[in-house]
Length: 309
Image (cartoon, rainbow, N blue to C red; front, side, top):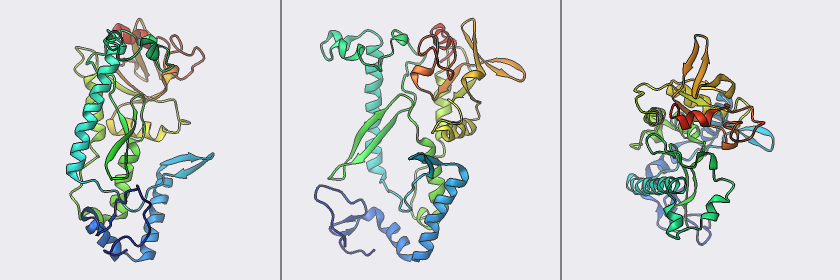
């Protein structure tokens, strides 16, 4: 790699994040120099290190039925602070709009009466959950975690590819990717003032605590997982561990008199907030799929009673 214009053809309508027609983009110049100083055999060993690190820690994904290490490029992607802050403001605005839409379609339905969207478009959707129509969450939040996929267009502008507002996964890769990059390229990381990501578990725990029913200052929070065979189980266990809360399966919980309890060696302990990582249809066999063995019978009734979120 040199500081001259790109030595390879760039297809029209695409954007090269590292190179511009005038050479290496300013944000990448320090990183470019780091790679210039690394011998090819050393770089190859660092790439191998990333793969082995993920295999050793269980950070894999299912590829055609075979567990493969998570693919992480040795070249970090850099986003400048000004661009990220602008994007962050837009994403927050986007989530607020989605929150308002969900509150309306599950509540007063002004979007229907005002003629913005036909009611049938929403109510006939397989994703419309009639079981929670009219339900008001304690703090008015339905999207506690938003996984919003971003891409760059041909001009280099960040655009939203899709919104994941149900049970998005992937933040564990963000955390482990950062740790792996710091280990594999310490000299590159040291060249930049990088925003931290390791405070995510604490932020998530605080958000979950704020979702607790009223009058519960120190809520019992659990992470509900489908189990070890789920493709995102690594993330479920990691988040539970880093938040300092129990990782549970449906069989660990029981609903009695409209209250959710966790079975422990000390007896039953009331649960106030459940960060559930299984699909809607498996949550409660009473309200959804009666053959579900992953959820908890009576869970939605407990939520309606206001004893659990």
